Length: 338
Ligand code: SF4
Ligand code: FES
Image 1 (spheres, protein in one colour):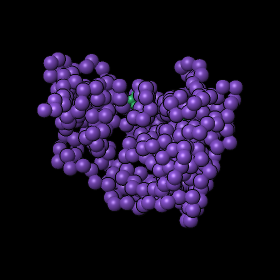
Image 2: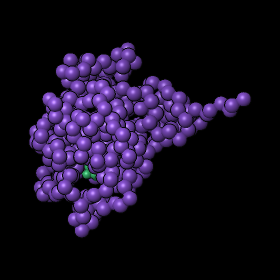
Image 3: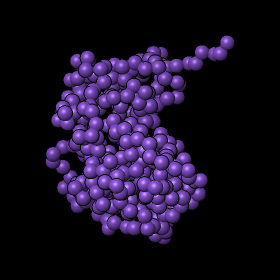
Image 4: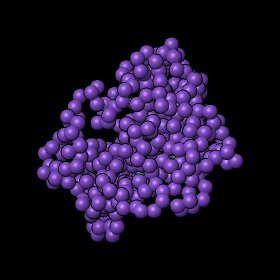
C-alpha cells in the first residue's frame, strides 16, 4: 500500500490549507489564492534562489506551530519562510502587516520615478499596483533621488536604471537560462546598480526573458517601446514549432499588427515557460504563428478592463466579516472597477 503523504496544516488569514512540508508560506497562500496571497516583487517560482530581497511579501506568524505555538517575534518574508504544522499566519487581516507593506512600498518608491504615463510597463507593473493599493499621497523623502541615463544593452533591450528595484530576477534569468551571464549588480547599498560588464551587449538565446521577469519598467523591449499602451492591445495565445523553446507565447495585437511577443503568464504574473529571443523579437507576423484563443486575463488589471467579466472576490472573503474589514482597501479598488 502506498505510504500516505505527510501534510502540514497551516491557516492563512483564517483559511486552512494542507501543504507538503518544505512549502513556503507564500506558496501555501498561492494554493488558497485570492486576495490573501502576499505580493511578491522579487520571488519568482521558476527562478532558483529568488526571493528575500524586496520584503513586499512580509506576513505575521501569530502561531509558530502546534508543538511550539509562540508567535514569531518579527514579521517574516513569506517567500523564504517554510510552514510548520499548525502554523497560523496573518496577512491582510493584520494591521501590522498592512502598515509594514506601506512602508516597504514607500521605500521602493524612494528612487523610483513616478513616470508611469511614459513607461512601457504601465498597466502590467507590480510596483504600480502596489503603489495604488498601499502608496501614500505624499512622499517623506527629501533628498535628491539617484538618477541614471537609459542605456541600450544590445539592440533589443533597454535598461532604465532609475526604475530598477534591485530584485535580482534578471540576474537569475541570465545565470539560469543562458550560458553566459554578462550583467549583474555592481556596488552595494544605495550605490547598487544593474550593469553590464564593460558595457557588453546582452546577446544570448534566452536573454529576452529579463523583460518578462522585470517587475517594473527597468528592462523594456526596444522593439515595442512607445508603440502602444498595453491596455489598447489584445493578447492572444499562439504557438509555433520552435527548435529552441516551447514556442508557446502570447501575441499582443493592435488591429492586425503583432506589436510584441511575450511568454504566457500565470495568475501571479509569472511566465509559464520561458521563450527564446527568436520567437520574441523576430516572429512578428501572424503567419509565423498558429493562433489558439484570446489570452485569459483574470487579474483585474487595466488590460482586462472593458474586455472581461467583472471581478468577483472569492466566496470565502464575501462571507467572512473579519476578512472584509481588513480587506477594505482591496474592496474599494475592485468596487471602483465595477
Ligand atoms: S532590472 Fe528589473 S529584473 Fe533586474 S534587478 Fe532591476 S527591477 Fe529586477
Ligand atoms: S517576494 Fe519575498 S522578499 Fe521579495
